[in-house]
Length: 307
Image 1: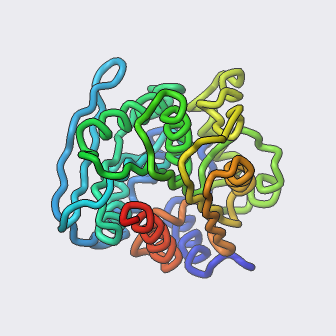
Image 2 (image 1 turned 120 degrees about the vertical axis):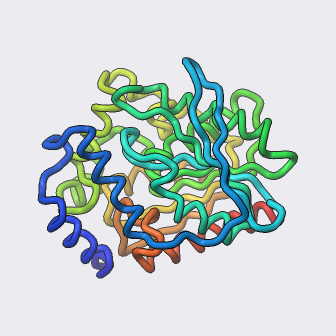
Image 3 (image 1 turned 45 degrees about the vertical axis):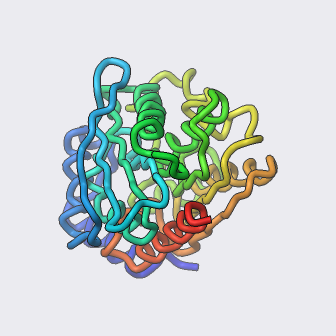
């Protein structure tokens, strides 16, 4: 199957607006400015009940967390970690996605504004994320089922948070939602060969650059907190929804993660999207595929929290 027409059109418009050139040719500041431009293209967000910002204590200070409340009583709590290659993004950039999940799933969603690399390299982001989960479980869950979720590098953090929750006696999680998660640092996989340098939003050079900002010391990349696919055991992890897309350099590691969950007898839904690229999921209101995938994630969340 070929890349979805809307994805092709977006790539063409993005290239004409920004010029060509992978991240190694741009500064962190330039990359952050580019990534922040998608929100203004997305239009209005779905109506929800309310939004507020909380401060969460972490090692060395505080991070902010934005709490999105549904119109009616929440049936569950979703702790969400945004993507952005460990380097880019903030909750405000993804509010259309968050509003959609809250409105469609009737959940309280808290988006953790973890500290970014390279200013705060590994393990700061993953530690902030787990601290955000612990704080949210204590202050926001109120007995509701808890789900961790994330896309791309946020999927990394969600997967690690789920494993830490298993290994450190909590919090108990009802599920984990991983959207094309980055689970390893092996750039020799087939999906890197097929889609690593094909003009997509995220290619091999992009991923190498992100990893260099986040974990410049290759020795730390093999650890399970950096590369959750390399964890010794997957037994006892919470049920999972794993979205894997075809036109994606991290396709194979996301699929390998899902396979390990299945091998460990963890109830796992694999949602395979044959005509989309890394990054599309957060483009609510811009791509029909994004809206459809968000609806499927929301349906999975509903099935968990309304069980």
